[in-house]
Amino acid sequence: MIANTEAAPVKLATYNVNGINGRLDVLLQWLTEAQPDVVCLQELKAPEDKFPRREIERAGYGAIWHGQKSWNGVAILARDQEPRETRRGLPGDPDDSHSRYIEAAIDGIVVGCLYLPNGNPAPGPKFDYKLRWFERLHSYAAELFELDVPVALVGDFNVMPTDLDVYKPERWRDDALFRPEVRAAYAELIAMGWTDAIRLLHPEERIYTFWKYFRNAFVRDAGLRIDHFLLSPSLRERLQACGVDKFARGWEHTSDHAPVWIELDDG
Image (cartoon, rainbow, N blue to C red):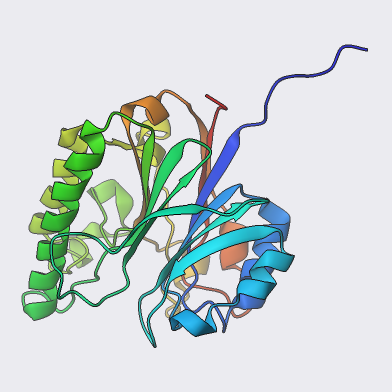
């Protein structure tokens, strides 16, 4: 018998869980069904000592996390291994106490998990903070890009890059997720050389990753695409497939985001 030596693709996912402890059953069910290799989580809404490490480990995943009481919080999970943490917190502002960035090296890929500020109401201090955070992300993304290693910047960017990424865009023109300054900031990352993985594979398709809880938004498919994968050139070449696990958004007591994933060949 000739053994099959073809390696399976790497499945990298992102999921804003909207409270990891309150929706832990939903997360664990999705992990069991989807079997991602690497997962970036956002909006943990849990301090460091309340992260459900044992439950995550029993599901077969090692984890690193950057928690914060009540709000924010990010984590990276890796199946059957421990992620090797390479950074905690986005550089550029030592006084920023928000838990919005964590980074790990996993199987030769640097994975940056981020939760970009919402920024509403705009204009205002929260929107100014969002733009400053974006500036810091530009600077750090440029550093990562110059390293010429496989990098994925993954997570909830709180940005709809184009009209194609939002249901009824005319209703969102003044929202902090869609204002021109924010879309320009995202476009600057693309101009730097990063690739929007979902849009590369589906350049003209309306794909949403978030639906509000009210006004029957999910049933009407009145959504937004705000969860993104930005890939360095070497990872762009490995990109094979992508998708949104909308079925998880339809579960009881679920997040208002759906898990989103890409598949990379084994390199």
